[in-house]
Image 1 (cartoon, rainbow, N blue to C red):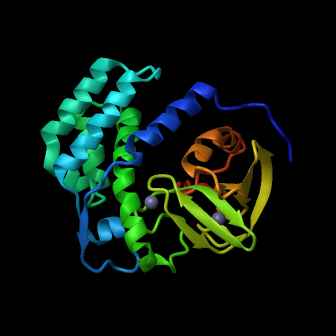
Image 2 (spheres, rainbow, N blue to C red):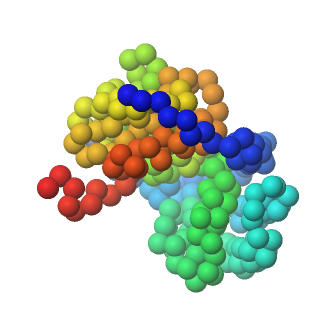
Image 3 (spheres, helix red, strand yellow):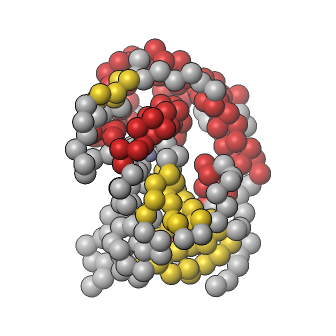
Length: 254
Ligand SMILES: [Zn+2]
Ligand SMILES: [Zn+2]
């Protein structure tokens, strides 16, 4: 294993740290009902209702944070996104919390939003609501063991190794779920440590070529740790590994 010198710029880490603060103490309001099918995440598997005004209020807070940050975001673009989101209002909120990804992608395309910026904003606004759902209802999915989040269906951002236990943390909502230690959560093959940097290890699967970024340090902000570990994604992609949750190309393995 080799070390390499790429690190995430401090300004970017500060930006994400500030982003975490915006929604931290937000008094989330949501309700949920229904019995989810065992193979579905709770989002999409249950009826989850978020008051549109609560969603839009938090959304506006994030827009203001982006506006005031050092990040190079065009103010016109933010104004257009804000206008489009408020116009779509309750329908957008309802579709988002039904896990209707197709609706969201169509919405981005129709509105001609910058997809990366819009998805980043949307993920921030969803997180406090999904976190609450996970804290209250996560027990329903204690036997999950898959490579996507049992609460929201998101991809694992990090693997957290605690002694004999292996947990995955969701990139979108931060929920932690337990998986078989040392095994690829996507296909079940053995994982191998192939690279280390910044206190993280890339665990790669020889079966499906997906990888996880692992840390043994559970008592850190995992959302920020995920940002700090971005150089490992660059390494893994250059080495030909696939992100967790990525579709394996048809030609792979041939
Ligand atoms: Zn999640
Ligand atoms: Zn695998």
